[in-house]
Each structure stands twice: as structure tokens, then as C-alpha cells.
Image 1: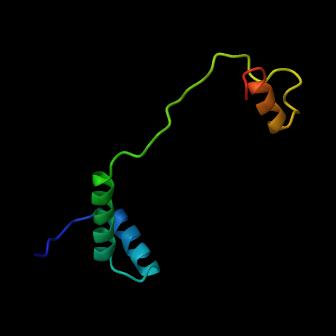
Image 2 (image 1 turned 90 degrees about the horizontal axis):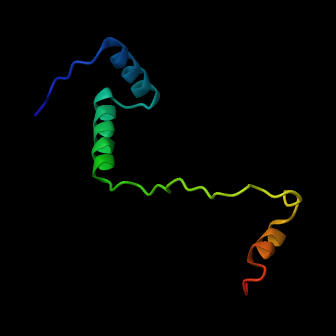
Length: 81
């Protein structure tokens, strides 16, 4: 079944230019876009880390130049780590 779709001139012009660059047809581009749209809609939501902040005073004076290993040791100091 062939369906005719009317596109705004500016969109059709851009689609023709892209199709020529990719050596394909406008119809193939539309099919590819629709296929991707359907895949994206059927994909479960991607994981997003929720925003979390800690109530603190930020980097303490004298720690900004310390190596990460030393910061880690200071974090677990006195906690059996």
C-alpha cells in the first residue's frame, strides 16, 4: 500500500538534500526515522540517577590539594576501613 504524504517545502528540501548526501531516497529516510521512533517508544525508560546532595561544607581547607587516596583514607579513618 503506497501512501502519499505532503511535507512542508522547507522540510522536503532538507530531506532531499540529506537523501542525496547519504545516497538514499526520501522515502527510505522517512522509513528509517519511523522505525527508530517506534523502537524508542517501545524501549523502557533509561536509568537516570536522581539528584542528591549532602548537607556539608564542601571541600575543607587544606584538602583540595590532597591526593584522592589520602581523601579516601581520611573518610574511613576510625571506622575500621
